[in-house]
Amino acid sequence: MSEQRFTLDDLTRILVEAAGADEAAPLDDDILDTTFGELGYESLALLETGGCIERELGIALDDDTLSDALTPRELIHTVNERLAAARAA
Image 1 (cartoon, one colour):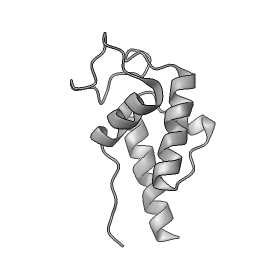
Image 2 (cartoon, rainbow, N blue to C red; image 1 turned 60 degrees about the vertical axis):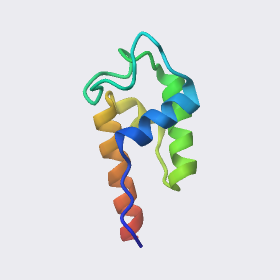
Image 3 (cartoon, rainbow, N blue to C red; image 1 turned 90 degrees about the vertical axis):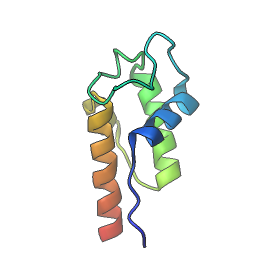
Image 4 (cartoon, helix red, strand yellow; image 1 turned 180 degrees about the vertical axis):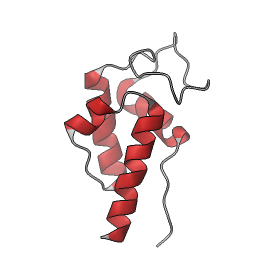
């Protein structure tokens, strides 16, 4: 099985699909350490994004995981940890 990695490109694609894009905070800049709030994504948008990630990658992300990940870097890291755990199982 090849090692699948979740990337910033994956996250930005899913964010736009799930919650739309805020033109005030373009997703093509260096956003890894910008909070989701600063990017215009509130908790409901992140829950929808989490659901899309779960369906696409076949992993589970609980609500606390999504609320604890304040930046794209943190969410990407968590998703990749879950992918690695699923591969190891």
